[in-house]
Length: 435
Image (cartoon, rainbow, N blue to C red):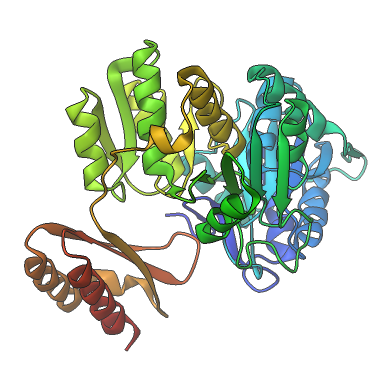
């Protein structure tokens, strides 16, 4: 049972839960684990605590005789991709808490093939953290700094999507985070006219009322700027939410339909299957099945989506949040790759984004968070009975309750054909939990 690592690496409140001491122990453990196979690449987002944790992590790694290459601020998927394509790294690490508030931070680890570590490997790291690792007084690793390594990522992505975007105006919301350089630079290399907001590496403002968790911002910006499409990342760039030219928000569910249809048409949709999660809207599943595409649900979390993709042989999967995995291009969620993939469909089919989502229906769905002291309350029999009673009131719909893997909250999703009813039920469950 993992204690430090959750659904997406180690994560918590910086300097309280994810402390320099924790980062140091993780560093020493992975330095030992990957010793002899090459340096470890470290990237980070723009949080105030990222430098502190990076210094501690790097110190731990070199104390275990393994070299470190520091790439500074870059998106999480850039670290995954560079670790995989450059071949000289034994692993990659990212200091980031993704879409979480600024006081949070975390450490994500990728193996040499760019995959996030399995639960079993993370458990092994936690055991190493509790052990007395033998260290050499003379065989100390070294730290190398390479701020330009992110340009390898930019050039690689631009080469994979060699579009002429000179006729495209693109609105950007970069969440003051890890994509502040790479996404604008890539789109400019492709000739696009970009109109960015929240595009400073600002640790005080990362994810604050901006980015993919606040999609209304990119919708408004897209309309006001007269852009053809809007792209909104989260703090570390593994997610993307789009806006069409009319300001309609296009989430991960709808992007999977757009890409799934296109891949199927081109004969690229391996095993004719797409993997979503338990959160994926029921109407999306119905749409895909009506078009002859198999749909499989995985637990929430991109690592579990990927596991199911590898199990079923699917090449496309993702989450409603905009975390899309396209195995043709990458082994982890990459918001820039997803956005460019959708732009590629627009170009090939000569349609604006609004036409690609036209007719896509959604069942009303509401998501709320309940702040709790003990997330184990979801296992309480009285609470389970209460939820069961709420679900019966829905008649046509469902209730999904799950503890967050990254925050001290319980996420409540209610879906049904009556919007007023689902809001009422979601709020009643939230009140029950927060009493």
